[in-house]
Image (cartoon, rainbow, N blue to C red; front, side, top):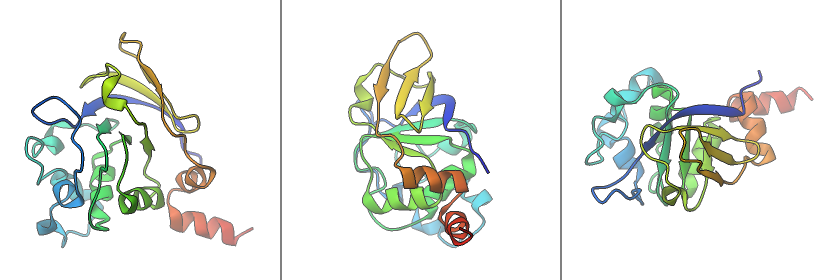
Length: 179
């Protein structure tokens, strides 16, 4: 299976009332513990950001192919894998953040879900609804809406790319076992 490593999508800037990217969004704000009994990934999307003030209607507004911009320490807290799967269920293409909670980052990579770290992402002039292009291999992020913003995030590591291309960590492990 070969997955695209250059994608385009519309941006969602996950901001607070002050217009700045929110920091320290924890896994309970991303996916509330009241819904942990939901085991069907297809059902998880409707609960994304269900405990984050100002963003509870995100699942109704987002569209497959959208890309999230988030602040620092996104996904802090527990090892709740549903906090990754809810975005997969919505068809979110990638999450680009100032930084990620360590467990969240590992869960996303293991799930083959694209996340990129890009310090300063909230200060480049990109706004909600802009179309951007993201190259996972190089880390380059380009605004395609006339603001001419370009930035360089951290590209996928070799192992992250291999897991992404395989689909997830389990598929990657099976692939390694066949060598």
